Structures are given as C-alpha cells and as structure tokens.
Length: 376
Image (cartoon, rainbow, N blue to C red; front, side):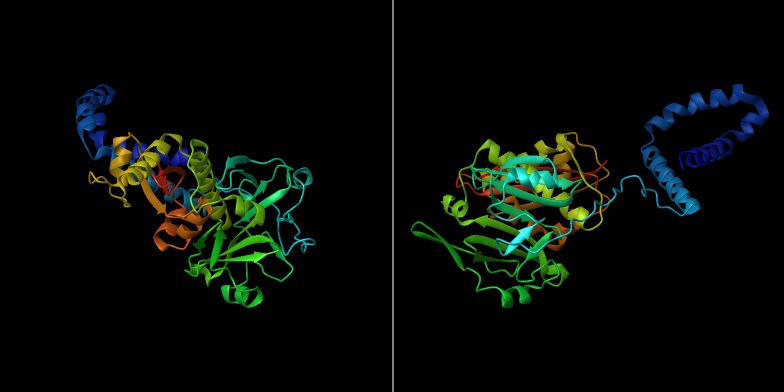
C-alpha cells in the first residue's frame, strides 16, 4: 500500500513538473529550470491557495489509491479488532448483573476474570469508578465499598443479564411492563429529589439498589445503558449536586471521555485519542459558562468554539463541540447527549480523531460539561 501510494505521488509530481517546466527544460536544460524554480518560490510561498491545492491533491491521491486497491483511505489504519464478548450468565444473587458481576461481589474475584482496571476516577458518590475494558470493548465501570465489594455498576454495552429477561434488545415499554413502578423521586433526609420523566431513563428500587435504565430514543427506545447503585451509597449522597473538588472535576472529565469512546466502539467506530492541549480550551469554556451563568456555544465575547480553538493555537481541519449542564454526573450527561441528535452526530462522527473534555462547577455546585472533538 505505501509503495503504491509513493509511485502515484511521484507520477503526479512528474506530471506537474513537466506541465510547468517542460518547455524550459527542452530549451535550456536543468540550469534554466533551476532559475525558473528559484524565481517562482517566493510567489508560491505568498500564494494563499497553495496549501488548499496541496491538500486537494493529497485527498485525490488517497481516493485514487482507494479505488485502485478497492480499499478506502482509512481502512485498516485505525480499526481495532473486536474483543470476544463474554458468555453472559443469569445472575444468582441479584436481579441484574453486568459482565457477570453483581452488587456485593468481591473485587479480587472480578479482576481474576476481567483483568486489571484501565482507570480509576472519583465520582459523585465519593468513591471511584473503576473502569474495565479491552480497548473500550466489553466496557463497564464498578464502584467498591470499604470492604472492596461492588456497590455500583454501569455499562453502555451489551453486557447485561437479568432474571427478568431484560437485555439491550428490550424496549422501554417492555421494561415498564416487567418491573415495578419506577420511582418518581428519591428522598434524602427531609427533601424529595424529583426524577425527571423525559422517557430517556427510569429509576427503580430493586434488591435495595437504585437501578437506572437508560433508553436510546434514536433506536426505538431500546435499553442502551444501565447504572446500579447500592442503597447505602445512594443515601450517603445527601444532595443532587455534591460539593465540587479538583478530583471530582477530573473524574467527570475522564468518565465522559471513556463513555464517549465506549459508545463509539459500540457503533463500530474508532477510538478517539485524548487531546491534552485542547483540554484547557474545553475547561475554560465550561468555567466561563459556570461563572457567568449562561449556556451556549457562543461565549459572551461572541466567539464560536472554532474561534476559541484558534485563539489557543489549536490547529484543526474539522471540529465540533457538545455542551451539557444540569445533569448530576457524566453518565447522565453522556446519555442525554446521545439522545440529542446534533450531539449524537458529533459523538458518532467517524471523521473525528481526538477528544478533550472540560468540566467546571457553578457556585451552587452545578456541573457544566464541554466536549471538543477535533481532526487535525
């Protein structure tokens, strides 16, 4: 493949060379051609169309190579082999399991089967989401209590087993007809925190656990993710928004990054790389919105996401931005973005290569999320 591309490039260059300097070569040989090239160099440097022309030629070469080899330009370059899906078994001690893991299972036994975690980051329950996956295949997160037993689980991939037969093929209607009435609120002390009824998720109290089942409105409202939190953990969280900290900010950022990649892999797309220079741009916009009480892609100075990237010397060919606020965690933010068509298109855009996530909190602890997608 590289050899064929090089041959085509050389042929194109030779053709361009002969088109511009063929007559000069026939009349004065290499010396005349050399002098003509020197004369034209400065003009080429100052021509604003040169870079665009070179890019166009490069794209056409890639398309030509793809046609000749019957392979698209990116095929085989970023694709990752799918990991083998585990054999799922019906849970034995709980109503639900994820990757054959149930609430109360021991961490050491889990990691004997799934391997070491890829990341640990603070969540809104004051403990860490511990992330397991194989290049984002078979992705799930677990939270552990002080005895290293599972007290929280989440996945947005088809790793769900249920004693009631609920799977990722189940519709919202079948979930509601199978399980008990979903909760309308969660009581914490003297306060009832209402659960939003937007048909994007339902929360149930099952086996003394709070089970939130998320639905994909763009795939016939079938199950797309599940979060299971032990009653003890949920009651320890005494408010809808928790006290912000630097560790929680970074935790939400890493979690949203991982959730986005797990969703992409679920749809057969490549994994996005972390764009570290772009994180500051995303964080600054979240902070600006949080401190100045607004929510928009255009900031108060009239700058677009692309203006902000350019101001921070971030080079890109294509870029996109997702914003979210009001959600209690990155999980709820991500699932909401996936149910919003424009945001979903950014998450599932096959042309994007990198991602940066920035989170900031308002004075009342409300998180603001910014996702910046980019192709160099």
